[in-house]
Image (tube, rainbow, N blue to C red):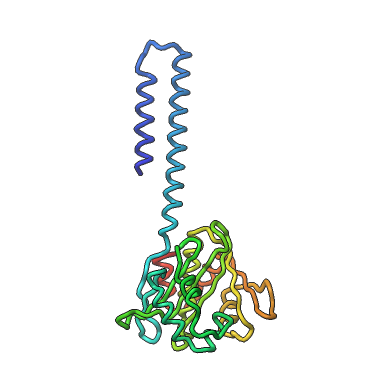
Amino acid sequence: MKSAVSSAALFAFTQRLAFRLLNTTVIQRVRNVLLVEGFCHCARLFAGLARRETKRRLAGFMCNAPLHVSLDTGHEILLRPVGLDDEPRFQQIFRSMSPESRYLRFFSGANPVPDAVVHSLANADGKVHIAWGILDADEDDTPLMAAAHAIRAEPGSKRAELALGVLDQYQAHGLSRLLIASVALSCRAQGITTLEAETLPENRKANSLFKALGGKVIRPLPPTTVWEFEVDDLIDQLKHMEKPEGLRAVFSTNG
């Protein structure tokens, strides 16, 4: 708004300045008109650049609003971006995973999960590494129930690796779809257009979900399957899903 007002004021000022003297020659008047147009063109150019820069900066803050959602079980959860402040929560969720879930998530049954891995998963900046978590709002310390990540191999890349994990007792209630929708919206705001995800053949739940979300297999097993998603298509697919009901809240708040 300020840029538009400044452009209008600059136009009015230069117009008054160019035509203030009535005894100027035709050539001088033509020259003054060209100067006015030049000033206005520059003003419009700088206003456009300012708007694009503002839009670029705002993208870093878009699609990050936390929201409370009720599950079909009546459970109250908090869906929000997570980061280094949540590192203790990441340690707790990995300790709470069953050996099978830990193996399906990390392709290893290592217990405990190495501190370096925990730190890297918590170290999300919202640009190179996007991370969303679902926290148990019914508990005083709001522990993590599930988390999802999109991690670029390098800054500025339009591709990122998608990974997620849900505690055993909270599976089959739509948490994965809530997380993937939130991550995908953040990815779109940050210019990430393609996501890849890797699964083990025995991870039937993840493979079934990724197929339902329109994922394409770009590398079949063995030893793992690699799925590919176009972010815009993934968002569109999730928008048309009726369950969980919290998806509507995700898109109305951050979509």
